[in-house]
Image (tube, rainbow, N blue to C red; front, side, top):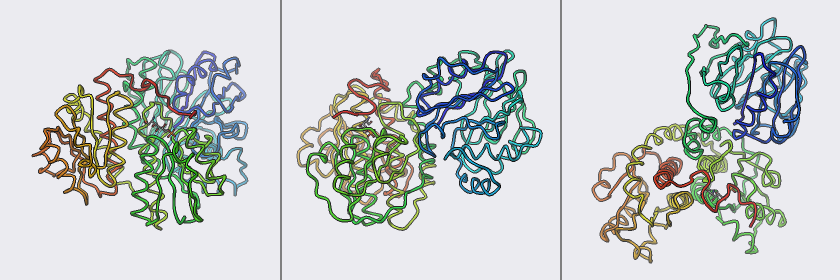
Length: 574
Ligand code: AGP
């Protein structure tokens, strides 16, 4: 996800654009750029953060700006936005154009020369090609050729308007006095105006300093609905959510959907895989082990990076070492990647930050499209890692992982927020929790326990449910509730018996179960029902209520949810 900004008015545009970029940098910060316009286009763009541009000034009372979170094309100056084509048109874009390669080939065939590796630049070449006398008509013709999700803003030299289009990515207009702003979110301009017009999907806005005209992709006029908002800057950055973590939990249907479309590198089918990661990424990897072995029938070894790097691991011919990391900077995981390479073993990264150290050092990389994850507790990156692992498993089985249906069901699971809140209120004062699951649900028990520990500081530990009678059941009491992942599965009956054993010892049980399972409600203290899906796909749904439960308990305890004590977003030291 990136941040786009536009300004047209009576004031110098440059300082307003710099200030706006600072407010949306959390949306993406690997590179940044500004273009202002008078009778010339004035461009500044570079890798790095907007801080570097503070002491510059570009002339003009209109301009566009961009803070980038790379998805297509590396992190380098040429791939930073804005782009300029024919020294006349300039554009900034947030989103992904899925058919950009075929469009780029067509444009190249007509002699167009590209300055970047991005999908975004293709939009601008199309607009330039379609331009006759009117920018709005050129944009309207262009959007019909695009497939994907986007919000972009385009300007033309000597033209006192900004034209912006939206399909699937946020775009909002700030209405000032003799001036207008455009942005990915209101944080960019809320200090200047709280009067906003939200542009909807399949709409195009034509903005001058005096007017805002909105029309649909067929050219039909739409009356702009102006409203007043009452957020401050920080609230706006969280899009109104109280914490980045909650915003990121709620974004998962979108980020999982986007990651469904990531391209897989051409990989020879390995004889064995070794999945190495830390923390939440490690638990994603353990789900990956279950899925790959089930679907592709290829053996997978699961390793914790901090152990792996010191155990003198045994590698076999045909091994593939898979490193999973949201940040791409975790020291132990990076060390594991380097160890594999020292032994000439193929390495594949599943990474969220483009051009991060791990991404640059592995042989191949799958970039998840979770966008910047600001909350220290990993949520949307985890489910994006799962999607990438399912895609990989099906790929090695010679199939395609569609996953669309189960991703759509995540919207329904997010509606459980209020129900989970009620349950959390009943258990917020407990000091210890047990999380249990069997088979593919065991890694989810581990992840659920970690989420609770790291943001609410409540002790929680996870066990394979079959392990209970080998010791942990001695812990069971009324003071130690158990979260039991007991969805429809091959091991349902065994899980049900485990719950009965706990209940027989006066333990309280919160079960996550499949819709329609009336039996489990008779023995458990609380039940959260999830939509019925194939057992193999259940992790993609179960992760979300576990995140919501941890979030709600921590909220009720008044914890610092986005910045939990003792933790950092990326552990770049041992
Ligand atoms: C997860 O909520 C934690 N923040 C932590 O366990 C994290 O998953 C771990 O440090 C790995 O980080 P990475 O994915 O950036 O490598």
